[in-house]
Amino acid sequence: MKPARFDYYLPATLEEALATLSELGSDGKVLAGGQSLVPMLNMRIAQPAALIDINGLVDLDAITCEHGALRVGAMVRQATLERSGPALGQVPLLAQALPLVGHWQTRNRGTLCGSLAHADPSAELPLLLSVLNGSVEVHSSRGVRTVAARDLFVSFFTTSLEADELIVAAYLPIAPARRRYAFNEFAQRHGDFALVSVACAVEFDEQGMLAHLTLALGGAGEVPLVVEAADALGRLLDRELIAALAERASTACDPPSDHHASAAFRRQLVRTLTGRMLTALVPQEEAAAT
Amino acid sequence: MMTHKAGEHAAIALTLDGTPVVEQAPTRMLLSDFLRQTCGKTEVHVGCEHGVCGACTVRVDGRPVRSCLMFAVQAAGHHVETVASLGTRDDLSMLQRQFHEHHALQCGFCTPGILSSAQAFLEEHPEPTEREVVEMLTGHLCRCTGYRAIIDAVLACARERKEGTS
Image (cartoon, rainbow over all chains, first blue to last red; front, side, top):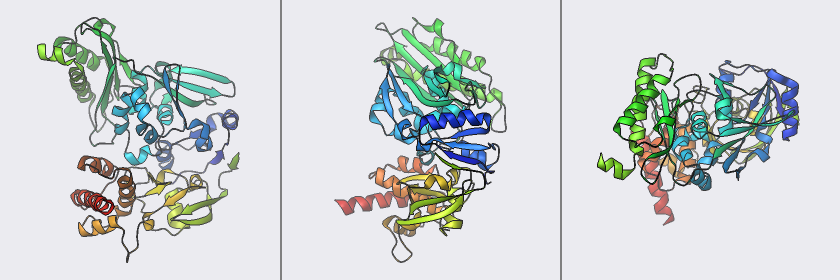
């Protein structure tokens, strides 16, 4: 339970960090909050030749608003986001998702961008980025690019980042005035990895019909899965539509079977949680009428 | 840029329980092992070593963190407080006294971590609900008490702190 030896780099600037990453290639691993990486090092699941500790890059510890999105730097701790009133106001789904991430104590170190780079399919924050249709700003010595959530997550613990690239910030779109969000998960104990999680963003027009719906699932496949729901737009979110969407979600996903739960049980959880979550979002007047 | 090759020792200067400390440690040394083996702070308990049990929790710059999920070299320049910063055997802190009075510990293995978390928690939540105390405690495993007495002790400490300030 002790990490294997590694070379340790503590860059003082982003340029130094990127040059080091570029030089080391796949031998180098970035250390931010360490709440996922260090357990893997301790158990020697990961034995990188070198760690590049970005905790010295104070410029990356900033939350700002840019281009209609909340820009969260790579060294912003989950606990900092959780305590930031403006951030929670602009991206209200954060207030629902963050308390489910690990524990209060691990959120004091863990970062949003680190969780995205780790790409655990059962983690909350990749699902949050996916349902919000957010993106990440990726730097390397070769340049800067923006990668949308749908292009970032490739497979279990695998992103589309190259070995020399670093996520410098995540962009979470600021909530439009009428948009509402929900995040729901089933875990065996609070703070455990969820067996499955579901999240959605909805908006209703003046007539109470669906004007926007994004439905996404976590822990139900290799990557967060966005469920196709365009055909629901313009319709009333009634019991029939909710049942159809819950059914679609449960058949669209491809959850794993392990000693915690079978794939069939996870599918059932997806169906139940999706149904519950959508039911809770039905505008009150319609709920009373049906 | 500071660089250390594998196996090299780094000089680590930090403030430990209010006292400046300078020690050497290999970069792969966990903060938990550094505190126990190098600094002699054996009140830092090491349980699971992958961030689940909470026994090794200490405060870094006031915030409770898992010392098994940080490298000692990362604590350089920071303030680290173990449970030793709270009180002594002869002069228990308010929180420690409430743990004593409520029988909130039995074997004591999880206790230093829980006290470290609960101290920071009470500073941030002066009037916590029981639900909030339970949420904080989900980050700690205790196999003796069933948690009830720990929850009562933390809530009693919050009440006592409030009475002390009003």
